[in-house]
Length: 451
Image (cartoon, rainbow, N blue to C red; front, side, top):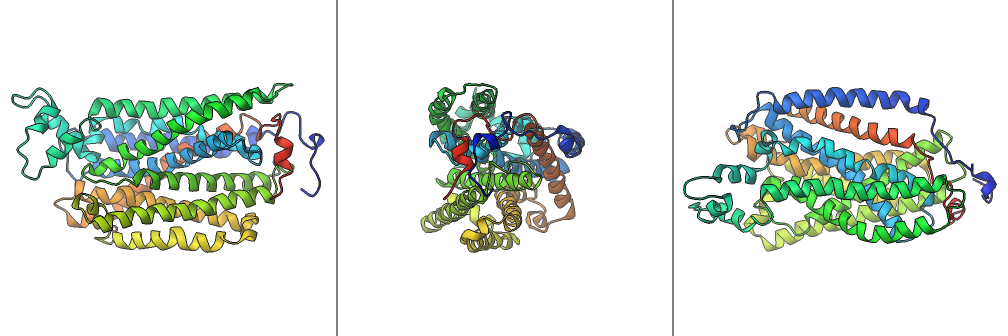
């Protein structure tokens, strides 16, 4: 883009991806997702009753694989949601060119509720959430009419049940189910509302500023919904794997990974689209420079909050807190933890600190892919080590990072299945509207960005 962009350089109807160009990838993703979901349902539910709560079965192992895959891909859509809401609240001008891509990515989130459905069934919950097993085991026992009352009078010598009693206001099954519905319906509905405002603008010959002002006002309180969803979804599905563990930084650490890799996916999407001939007059290296700077900022922020979480727990040295890191520094998990420390921060920091790197698509492609790999490792370390103490009490080798090939192929199956579903929704969404809000009053400001 070597000249000043005017309205004559921007098509009146925007730019649309021909459905035929993405027909094959969409079909492949759809078929892989469908077959994978059928196989996954068989693994999770066939010959899996709600009795053998700690047995090291295929269903038990695969429940953790499914949770890992879900956590990774839902974090990407949450990252897109954050950037979309921040764009509106900050009244950003530079981001108009990529706002539609933010909308497409964000609107994958409510569809991820389909992937979360298995977590609603006791056959899957029994392997993941010990606190639910305790609740169900105590309901209607003896003279006590409720699990809460039974927890209060529990003779447990280690006070574990008493700890769960103190958390009963939050950790009870009806409230947990209500929160799960709120996450996907509440935030999902808000995101689709913003997308509708944006898409309606494309066909309005006199768009004006009304929709933009509405989006900005609504996004201010939608950010609150986002913050609650991102934080407590991580609490309810990942942190709750060990209900005894305490951390005040966990939600922020999860948020940092979401935002960082959401931006990485947006960068990768824009590069691929521009190489395919789209958005030539709308985006420039200046946009990639800004997006690269935001990626760099959250590489540092992720390192900051992750170290802060570790430092606070290490310094306090409280049993209920240190158990998380003790587990992840035994049975070969220390190798993965050290790889995360140096790989997730040091290498991206050294590359992204250079301004010229951020403007070169040929360098940013491998950097974004590398960030995805380390982000997957980050989520794997969050989820997979809990598989050991929960399922392999009588099989010490099962707690190791290199436990068995069966676990690896289960993890890969879940990751490919959920990934195919994610990209099926994302790619289909890309073909339904213009790639950018072509009638936004600030589109020329964004197209002629200089920083």
